[in-house]
Amino acid sequence: FIVKPFNPTLLRARVLSTLEKKALSDHTRDQLRRKQLELNEARTLQLALAPPPFTGTIAGRSLSIDVLLEPAKEVGGDVVDHFRVGDDMIVLALGDVSDKGAGAALMMARTHAMMRALTARPDAAELFGAPERALGIVNAALAVGNESCMFVTYLLATLELSTGKLAYVRAGHIPPFHRSGTGGIARLGRMGGPPLGLVEDAVYQSDTIMLSPGDRLLIVTDGFTEAHDPDDALYGEGRVETFLTDLASSAGQPLKQLAAGVRA
Image (cartoon, rainbow, N blue to C red; front, side, top):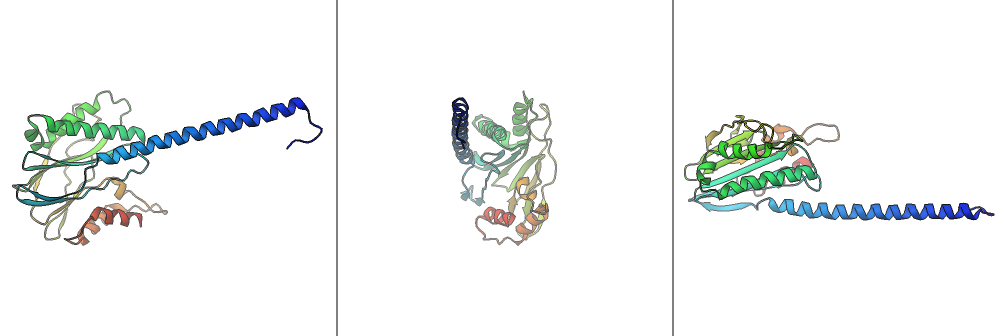
């Protein structure tokens, strides 16, 4: 508002100040719009790294794999993957980077690329047959030059379909839930080593269990177990175990059902 009579010099100063603020506001808005577009594109690319669900027969065994990846922000640090090695082996991988946002997303993509690169080695079958070796290689590479001390909790498991033997390494990750065909719930609790990226010469150890027809394996990140309501009550591992116990044998897309329960 200008009150007459006005001073021309003061009027010019006020108008120029207003125009400068408008230009700065427009520049900030354009920058935010550009960054949002970049983040949306990065989110699309990150989600594309997650493999699709699988249902089919391999080595004479029926197998179903369900996958769910939903970053807490535009991009995040969760990595999920499954792939075949040879004619008889399925590799399952789930990881959670210690941070969120763009930095965690880059760490996640690097971890994903390193693990997939191992499948091109001529000794890939032997390497993933002893998953502690594969995890040790990836850990050593991630730890080099890791000045920020960002780390990845990780669960790597390999399933021999002909025998039903599951070998797994739990690198600081939440113990997976194993539901037997009779409905009993057990946890794969043996710790195989520290999270990836912290100690270059860390030694990892695997453990094995036998899976039978009708068994289910549920691997989650703390995005499920540490989700909390407005009163800061955690969803917790007990609710996840109850969900798996009550899950019908023929239930499809169970992870979407679990995610809906967390949101509720």
